[in-house]
Image (cartoon, rainbow, N blue to C red; front, side):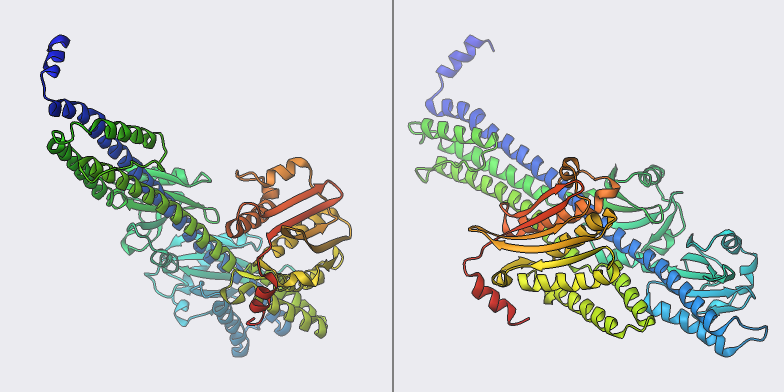
Length: 606
């Protein structure tokens, strides 16, 4: 139809038809377009959130798996020391089997398995070929060990921990069908360097795959550990163990993902896979999620938007005649509102001045925007809640190396006969963990936090008496102010390990506090190596820092983010430092309205 003919046709229509012709492209089509765009945004948001959630679960599984492997290595190291102690105290056994000596060795093995329950079984074979096992069934097939590649490999080693891949074998296992990950170690006498024997520790595959359902997933995800050859070494489905990944493309992708340092995703048909590398063994944790699980709720939203658009269209068709005289102005206002929303202003609303069809259309439009805002707010809330869960997880983790080192100090002091120091160190350790746990509270008083720091420094002074001394000068009036648990301790630890120790001279650590008009200021100051401007800038960078500064940057950044999460953006930490002169880290905290009364109330139950 020519333009002139179309214009003539339009002029000959009634006002109702004219409104319909104009209203449909100006209102209904943008509404459907907005619905379509909103649906796509919502769908993509759900997929991204799901991928992030799966990745977080993968990191949690990875942490727990590597914890099991590290516990096995700790068990091997502990047993090595225990066996050395038995040989030193009892001597090596003669040619005739000594039941008492055998009992001593087996008791040491059993105790190690009790302390490290992640280890399923353990065997020690001395140089005379005598076998000491944690379970009698491990003796079956022991005659295969002397000719095994495992022993040949251990003979060539220098006493380091050696992992042998996930496998089935016919010796030193509780069940011949058992799939185990084995840690081997040549046991060397510490004083002479002689070989005492060989230690074999087994980690049952079920200990690893048992983590998968414990972590769980709302998306019916399946997990499996894949080695560098594309072989499945751990999975809930026992039939999959020690077989190659079924899909060649997925197998190649999993093997390639094991070479990288970041999580990677892979889509194959109706399935999404996320790969996470485990550095200790070179394995890759592959999590597979059906795509239909990710988008199962988007169909409802799509039908809702379609139904809403259809309802709006019906309102236009049936109400155009009655609203011909009053539709123009509301239509213009509605169009303007829609344009604002399309520009990203979700606070814009259509003001309906009646309860007619236009009012209903505007109400439906506003309701849809509210629902979109609700969905976006829900995503933000879930992200915030996830951060709080991660914070709770971090605060609930008690650093094993600090505990191990302190126990070593206590043991050494006991060997030296310094019973008073043993008592003081043990009491400081107990008080430290009492405040760290603090009955689940996240907020404690400054006094409690300072006591925690005193206990921590009391232990560290015993370890590093030649490195530093400390002084705490915080006014008593500040002790009742609230503070986030574990705010000062990480700053003190950072000052010791990254300020005072590297300085190579005796230093001083000072903890002080003061009250300004608007803030509580707590300072941790050291006269250690200090930092230049480039190092200070690197602390706040989000990218992965250099290896030497990673722990320091993470500790300071963690305290900063936790303070801001609980108290708001105006608060956090400030850092002043000069190379060769030292560093001052100031924690800036809010002043509560009734700090002294609140502080006393919180202090009483503790």
